[in-house]
Image (cartoon, rainbow, N blue to C red; front, top):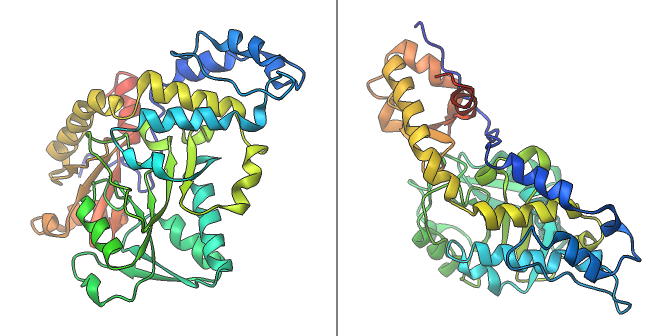
Length: 343
């Protein structure tokens, strides 16, 4: 075949051009003395007043100086508010922590489970590899479940790590599936790393057996390389994350809030959905693969039944993209070419 499929097997995010000036704006607006413990909180408020509307409530010490140990608290509150239409239940989790993306929170949750005596987790077949890799690093067993072939009622209750939208194919898992697991007394750790990169949808995290939620801004805003916008929400205290009140990237927290409020989750999806469809249209016209657009704007996918009519050359092209019984394609190289004026 003349044309090569230049999608990526792993999901490397597209650093959206709309995001870049916001990161630079925040970086240049933060005064050096924000990092000095003797700087009055009032002065910091005045320095960053133009960044946020309404102005950010900057915490202060009893002496009236900037309290960077607590700066994540008002920022997380406002990020939760920005995501209130997509995951309104986030505000009901009593514990929240800033993290470097969602992966840090995942590891700490796995560690907490392990030291509490839980030695196995459930994941859906074809899920994000990080759950299994870190669980096995901790000596835990990983049970991979085929969602279409398994009767959930026959499974012994356990702990699930589920990404929604799903890392398997970039598509939204219906809330009913999550609720069924919870009603069967399974505990669910919900990874919302792709939330904001899809069509508007209310992700229900309200069930008491959704014991923790992790979030990342990597997929919806393309800031994977910057570790901007990671948060962990838990129904139980996470002692190993307590130290993040000190060990955190303060500028990245300001940048995360600016992205959440100025662009907001889902806004880039609205713009780039047509780009995704055009990219896949060209790929399918050239290679005849019939790749479908995922709910997540950066991905395309094929189901098992979709490949029935493909010939040997076409099957060879998609072979390395196989995940469980389907196929997933990351379109980031194509997005970058479109931005540069290519096809």
